Image (cartoon, rainbow, N blue to C red; front, side):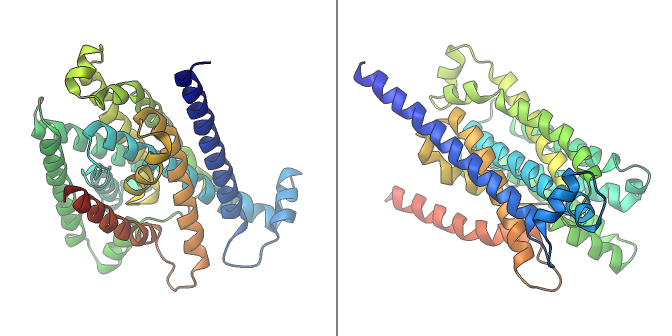
Length: 341
């Protein structure tokens, strides 16, 4: 076997090992999310009751309260980690993620409008629809403002503008809230949380998240080619307009569906790809599955931390991820500053 073939075999084995380790960590985090709560809970007995079809208190707590929370942590984190990796590869910018370019903010605005107008009481399906429609509109506005032949810097600036607009519109809705209680409820929702969610929320969020993730995975080969430059990618036969449409639609569906049931959870899509990129030899297509698994692990772990930290009222999940992500952003800027010296 040649040296090149041997190195490729070792790389493939290392990548499979990485995915195996991440999958095992995700399984552990998921089980811990089911087992850990605010009060005493016999997880083994509750699991036995649930599996045997009993409807005692332990089984009800496990199925109705803890399982939806763990499933949402898994799916929302998976979507955010994947979306962050795709956006950083497509824009070739380490600071790109759905929150920074306004997709998350727009999805939050769409969901807040549904809350504010009272339409969420008409049908629970309107909440994710509002988030997804607003996220799609933000994606289209992003590329409309940046122009067809925009470079990376222009896209980032357009994203900052869209994010500012979404933030301003959310502030406007808060300002026009009929009473302080409604404004407080919206503000707490915006901080992100999986508390008091049910299997209905999982059923609402899952279809758009799955559809969006499939669209994002379809961009993997084009992202590898884009790492060599847009001209090279085009010469290799990749239509960047299709890639861009898959990216915008995929991020809008995945992030819109996630934000609509969980609120805004920032920094997951920014932090996770950076942590895992060295383990996949900086290859975008290999980073996508790893980043998705890593995002789910981080989100589930942060949600477990929310339950372990004894505060009143409960810490919001978006606050915990921000506390983790902000120092990481400082360290990233510090490393980039060092590279420029």
